[in-house]
Length: 159
Ligand code: DQA
Image (cartoon, rainbow, N blue to C red; front, side, top):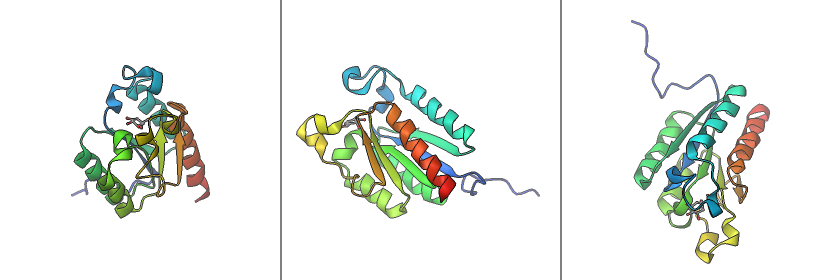
């Protein structure tokens, strides 16, 4: 019998995972003065199109549940995801658990924020992720995700 391809089978194409934390499902309507008017679906579509052109498998995942995001990070290790782009949203400033998950899988990641967190409230200026990240993009709106992807595509070509 022919062996079924499972989701844990390594893909011939390199894999990139995009993770979005809590409330980012509300992009487009949520505080547009900080986060703009582009929806999460638009962002994910733009990323998927760019990745497709580069023949890279890109999956996007959003959750309002910390445990769900952590489990998705664990699964990424089994799926041999090469790079992660993550906007941890409010968990940026609170979540040792999500930080530890990224440290545990040791998948290099870029931290993205739509708003410039350094120009906002003091509590947003500490991140549990930045010291582990390959790099941080903050304040460039939805373009930040595409710039992060562009960097990673270039890395994948030179790795
Ligand atoms: C955010 C900034 C965080 O401080 C905030 O909690 C978010 C979104 C951003 O993309 O600018 O939810 O990560």
